[in-house]
Image (cartoon, rainbow, N blue to C red; front, side, top):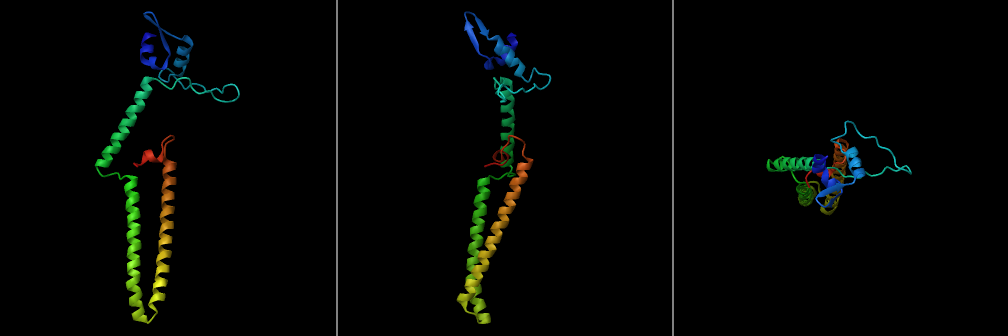
Length: 177
């Protein structure tokens, strides 16, 4: 019992009385029932009075916390390594680069419209102002189609990520932010 209390003492209320440390026997029994390292099979979940399930009394042992911390540390090291190897890109950087690319593309279209309107006006004898208005309409329509396509693809990627994602893991944890 002293070994068990050394391992899991942080989860049990211990009260010092003289040279002895006392633990509530009921709390000790409840903790041993909930401790996954002692159980040979999963505990049966029974609803408490009123149909609601009672929350577990103990949040876990020190070894459970250490295992979760070790797993999180390993995942962080893996992400750091991927970033140093240039295998990962931060979401913020991708977002910024995408917005910059769209702004550059829109600017290029606007510049091309001016020169194309002038050349089409000379080549076919059309009114330059009317040609410019028509080309700007085509450019705007093309940007709308491009925007819609990109949003649909991003939405499909998010749905795919959500379907592959383990329970309890968020998309932000799966991708660097």
